[in-house]
Image (cartoon, rainbow, N blue to C red; front, side, top):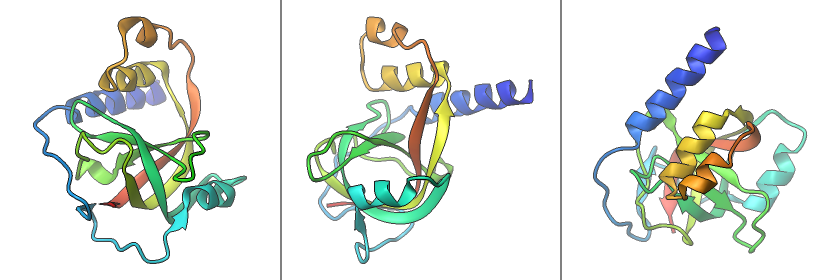
Amino acid sequence: MKLRLLTVLMVTLAIIACKGPQKESAPGEKFGKEITADKAISFDDMITQISGQDSLRTKFKATVESVCQAKGCWMNLVSSEGVNDPSIFVKFKDYGFFMPLDIAGKEVIVEGVAYREVTPVDELRHYAEDEGKSEEEIMAITEPKEELKFMADGVIVL
């Protein structure tokens, strides 16, 4: 019961956070905690390092595959080397910052914690709606999904 209530609360917070105006991105723009590009590893190296672990504090470079089109409250990242599987779902610490809506295809450096989590169906449907997917695509989501996720402290748009 407590887990269900927590899940409903998290989804509600995600829905509330995904509303509001947004600006366009600028190269070199930073969001969240002040970070630098120094010692950032590749997406592929991060995937290798987290293999077999529940979580990993790291800083890596990746390509933005998609961004929440409601407010920029999440993004999906993929390998900058053109490998699109796997991807990592990124949220921002304490909903303290959001990403510009126009950064799909751009490279970023993110710093924070990578972790594994099972995402419930209602939350997956919410993210599909934020991404602009059709009602048919949204309703086709019927199973929870174990995902690699990332809680970003800071982001640099390259």
